[in-house]
Length: 372
Image (cartoon, rainbow, N blue to C red; front, side, top):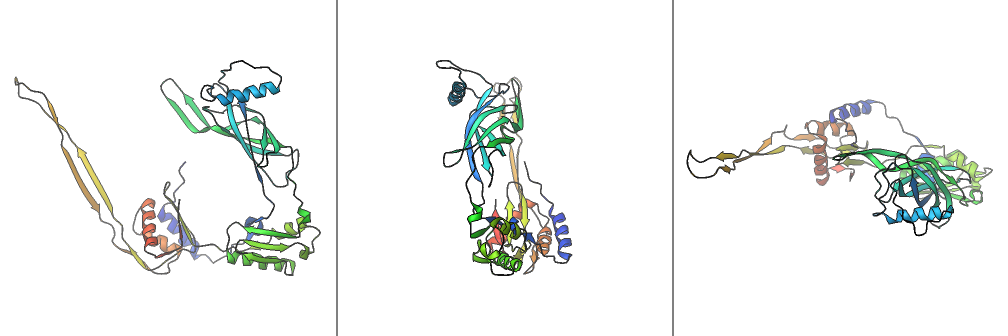
C-alpha cells in the first residue's frame, strides 16, 4: 500500500499558515514520553494447527511437519493414528505469537497473531486448535484457540489467480487466555527509573523539574539523557502505584531534534519544525532519453530470387528540460520558507528528495537526514 503524498504546494501553504499562528507550547503527558522500568510486556510464541480450511491448507508432501503436529494432537485426544497416512488439504501448521501485557492476571484474555509456516494458500475461515504459548524461559503462560480473522483474500481458477492482502496471516482478538502470571512486586520498589523513548538532555531535565515541582521536593534526578530516577519513598505517597499514577499525568514540553525523513518508495517527505538551511542556491533540470525503433521490411523485386529482410531503423535523442534556474534559499530559513523555496522549482516529491540529499551533502542542511 502506497502512503499518501501531500502536494508540495499544498504543504507549503499549510505550513506557512501554521507558522503565522502564535507559537503555542506543545505539552505531553509523561506517560506518553517514557517507559517505566520493570513495567513491560513479555513475548509469547507457540506452534499449532489450523483446521477447517476450504482446501487451502498445507500440501503434506511439501510440509511433513503438519502431519506430525496433527498426529500428536490426535494422539493426545485418544485417537490412535500409528501407521496411518493423512493427506487432508484443510489443515495448516502455524506459528502463534502474542504479547503478555504487564500485570496480566490469570484468566485474562489477550490478542494473538497466527501465521502459516507451510505452503498453505489461505487461513481464511480456519480455526486454531488449542495451542500453548511459551515465553523465553520455556514456561507456558497462555493457551490460544479460536476462529482466525484473515487479513486478505485469494481466488484461483484454472488459468489465473488473484491475491489481495496477506491471506496466510491473521489474528484472533482475545484469542488466548492467560494461565500463568509474571511475578513483579511493584510495591517493594524504592526507586523507579523512567526510560525516555527518545533520549534527550533537555527533555529529561524538564521531566525532572516537572516531577520535583509537582511533589514540592527533590524526588527526581536525571542520570543521563535517557533516564530519570524517581525516589518513591520521598514522594510520601501510600504506595509506588499511587506515586506513578500521579506523576504519569504531569505535563511536559518535549524537545525534538531537527530531522528530515524521506521515504524513497512512496516519495513522502517529512520536515521537522526545527529544520534550518544555510544560504544556498538550487537548480534542477530533467534529462529525457528517447529511443525509437522503426524496423523496415525490404522485399526483393518481382520475379527475383531472394527473401524479405527486416532492416532495423533506430533513432535516439536526449533532451534537457530547462528549469527556472537557480532558486536561492537564504540562510536560517524556517520550515515554511524552505518548503516554499524548494517548491518554486516546480519539481515532483521524488525530485525533491534528490535535492534535499544534495543540500545535505553540501553541508547546508542543519538537521538529521533519515532515508527509509
